[in-house]
Image (cartoon, rainbow, N blue to C red; front, side):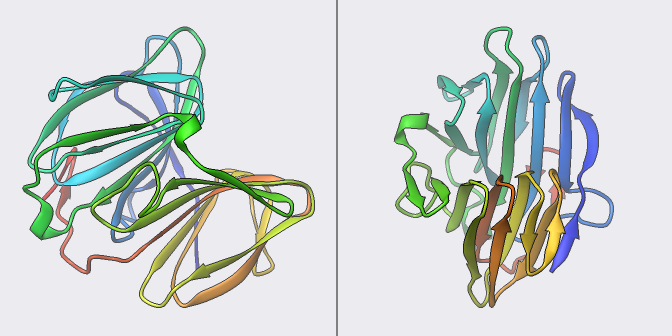
Length: 240
């Protein structure tokens, strides 16, 4: 398994970002091509800009964000909600904070298979109440992206938000051929005896079976997917 420490940078219009990839030394983790933990203040954000060739999921941890795009969509997503666009053959969109409260969230880009690159652009919104939540012992699990979840991608992806109470634990499984990524929002969390601090991530290829422990409580986002195994040509806002 590989530990990842994010690189801090500025993106868009004054947005602060902690980026896992793409950065020097780690361009992507097929099929994932970008992972950002972003922070916005009033007046900052992501004004109109183009994309093509992938799908993007935004998950709000705090505040509210307004999405507008060239398809005519105009949607506000609040804390605990998610949104997704399929860039496909091309889309122009913006994501800007609503109100004066700071905004915090995660954005994940998922590559489209070569056969799907020319799909028409599309948009999905999933308010917080549409995202299922279940309690398993001392862990609360929210299913953000799943084949039968409120956000569905053309690439089969699972994205879960895991909230641990003190002493909570969860068995993690990454099947053979899959890739897994765990991003720690509140740590430390312990995976196979290794401690991961807030803001760190760990990735690995299956088959993997291990236990994730939170002696003092914590929070993490878990991703799982099957790689496309195709060339990834990523340049700026485009993945061709």
